[in-house]
Length: 56
Image 1 (cartoon, helix red, strand yellow):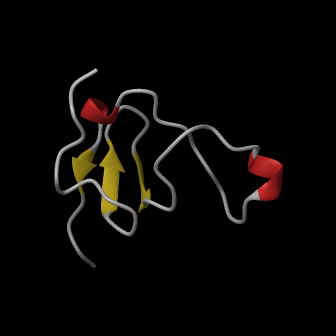
Image 2 (cartoon, rainbow, N blue to C red; image 1 turned 135 degrees about the horizontal axis):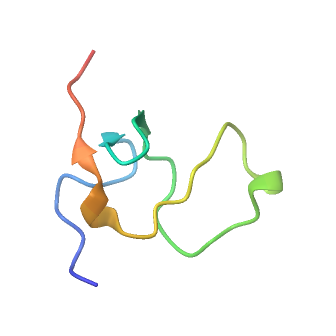
Image 3 (cartoon, rainbow, N blue to C red; image 1 turned 30 degrees about the horizontal axis):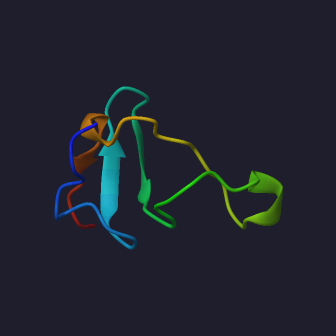
């Protein structure tokens, strides 16, 4: 897997065009059980699918 781009960091607004979802990156790292985390979560296996989202 290629290195993570500089714009992709915890707190960044991202767009997942494959799923047409937009959100704020809350965690980058190894999988954690979603039942122990707050909010709605989706797992992105390949960060290359993500794009920076426009600020609102």
